Length: 278
Length: 355
Ligand SMILES: Nc1ncnc2c1ncn2[C@@H]1O[C@H](COP(=O)(O)OP(=O)(O)OP(=O)(O)O)[C@@H](O)[C@H]1O
Ligand SMILES: [Mg+2]
Image (cartoon, chains in turn green, purple):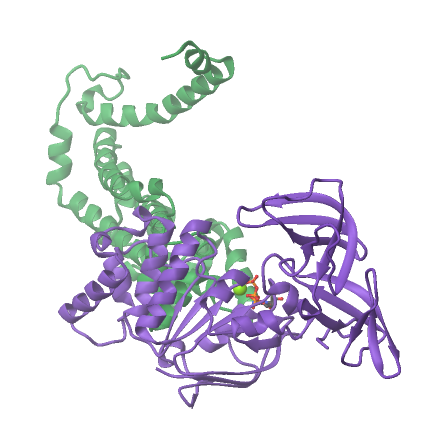
């Protein structure tokens, strides 16, 4: 390493930035570390706030994993998050593509209407959703949990913005090659926006995996609980079993990590437009 | 294979009309090049032939069939785009095979066609590559391959060479020309490069502001440009155009330009523009004479090897003339420029039409 690059590395500005990032990182990691730490402690030790458990044990994991309820909630969450994610990836991009690449009367109005829903927080939508679910008889059902998220304004907006960067030449070339409009979307346009699709998939999966308020409100039967709702119910029964909650929460991070590791390389790769000279 | 007939074709974008009722007949197997400055409506016209743009008025027929209402895929055409538009997520072979999307051939038959086309275009060793691992020229060849593989009735090219460097452009020009000789398919080719137009075309269509100014074989346009625009657009370097007065006496007109009036056999309006190509306007030797003689001062000398061009500040403005490559005049020297009457093209100063 040359002297100048060393100097650059340790320039005061950089040092400050690195320290800030480090502090931020620690701040985010600490609760997670305590979660893992607590999950390895015996129930007697949980208020012993040492980070390294005095007598680490996997008993909590055995308890949680052999508890049928936990597994049920885990699969509920997994199925719901997966279905909602697939639905978003498909429908958000279909609508986003249409808004980006087709000229039709009222296009701008539709786009504005979709955008405006972005400004309304979930908490305000919960009551209308509930009324809707009640009227349609969707209360306490999987569909009831999923329907509000099957398409999102954010996803549609994101995909529209990305499809706008896809050059029309590709679509026109495909049109001349004889593809129908859906095939153009499916076989040409969609593969060109995989980074955006991956980002959308990760984002949608995570937000559904951790969703709490709506599943809590719409479900009453314990078999239909999602994992976050189920874990919280550990807390209200008799006494709060922190070590079990923390174990469940620790297990709950696994799909999150899996999804992220699976999809992140598509995001990092960036938009590839090698077929085009611009 | 098929010819194309364009009849009173009109294109409007909202209230602005960009193609003003053009007529053109393209013979079967002909190589027709559209040239014109940026924004003159070349691409729009080509895209209407392709079916990528709606036709507002008039008709287009391909092979005797009116195609106004047909989808691109129903027109039996293939198009090559300026930006290549080869699909980045597919290999070269997959890209070319996409041209056969509607063919209904089975996989093996498709593969065979792709390999044949790859062979013709020299893409055989590249068939499994991704477009990102190709050079610009190779990418353009893939785009041409995708168009060729279908054996269409008409090829449409929209400035396919404008993203290539000069050397590659010359090479691809040659390849396209040979491809046309080999396949004999009708080609409509858009460019704003007059050299491309001259070298490739059976017939050139000169467009400006949504009108066709002139249609003709390259040498016809070079020799007999219909107006100042075409005269200056076709041929390199650009033709000199000098304003002049004409007088008529006893039924004979003469041109008041240069050292002596020049008698002209046909009737002339009072104001004319005199066009003379740099190759026709020579730096005269001492004591030499010519039909038209202009004197001026050398401003810039441009030796090009076989010939040398000199920019001369003369009557009528800055003129480009040719000089002896061995003994070019020096900058700042006074020279006399001469042209023969047969080398002059006269235009009406008002309409800019040829006389
Ligand atoms: N989608 C559109 N909406 C409005 N006007 C358009 C549209 N497309 C083209 N035009 C206009 O139509 C005219 C002709 O455009 P066209 O693309 O045919 O030009 P061109 O001759 O191909 O030029 P270039 O050499 O720059 O490609 C231009 O004035 C352009 O501004
Ligand atoms: Mg164009």
